[in-house]
Image 1 (cartoon, rainbow, N blue to C red):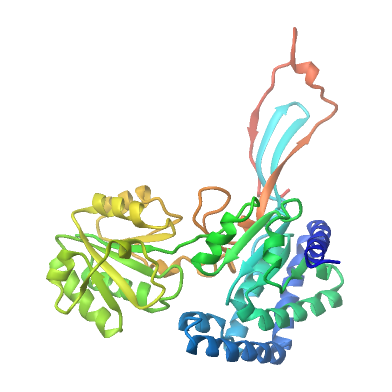
Image 2: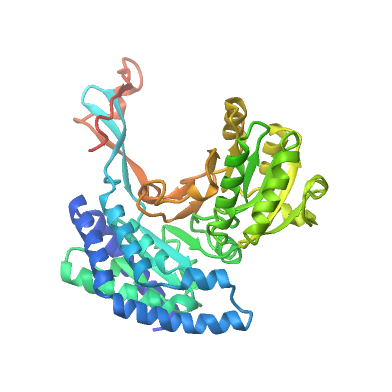
Length: 444
């Protein structure tokens, strides 16, 4: 059997397992996710030992200039982080059942009722880099929403991912309800090329990692892809912004975790607020170790040396303690700038003027738009989704942090009592009622 055959065999087994999982009651899947959380903690020593080996290699890569310090930070796992992962899994288990929800009911005629009902997507392929938590989040979300998953971790995290999957497989074998094949993993880099061709078996691809990874996946497959290639997030400080709030929100959005995809990369300041806000911002951000660039008006107002921004800086995801500051004439100019240079991820306005806030939230074309809140809130756990599959910036299927609902689609269920289409055509045809019915509590 060739390597390609092995990958296809894994995907075939995952497809078969997905049908088993889809038929399981909600409480069985909920209990399975809770059991996985316990299994991770029970296997803590093995998982942390595997991660320590990955970290040794990663540190050598950082020293050689082959890996960023931010990537090493994301890769590193300790007992505290593992406990947090277990908490996330329990949060996912506690979420409302996403499958079998009745979203619409229409009475087409007496005894003929149409329902739109949520159902699993099927098999999700997750391709990710140095993110141990991606394994646990994606698996928990997939099983809770009655899907199967095929994992392809980056080589920098392969030992950690394998240890986590081994612990999960042992847990599923003990439980007996969910086939271990519902959590598949491939190690070989060439396996990605094979996975991306399996549009007859894989229903959704989720890339999590660098811009290069996400773009590469999007360009190489016909399978639907959920993800974002860039996280160029903006904060616009309006003329009516509270100065203290404005500074604190920018610092939080940049400094709290600068490598996150929801960290701010560009700050726009209303020209009337700029003489006050820019000196305060520059002073505070410099104290936090942030390297700053800006437009000519920003440079002129800055109390410290701020470099003149290059054209590319306005649409660059720094992923580090770097920030670009620009002065704009009004909220309309800010909206136009964000739509032209942003990545449609997360953008925020700071203002006490409701009119400006309403305009920004309505007209900025991004998955997440915030008023008087840090861009760092764009996260599945913080949104109350339990965890997130990823963040979608496209217009179709799912946008923003994607939780359980993003792993479902829907089917139309028609329940009749012997009706024939011929009865509704020709002379003397019956008329459809097309009466909208309440969906009830949403459960089938």
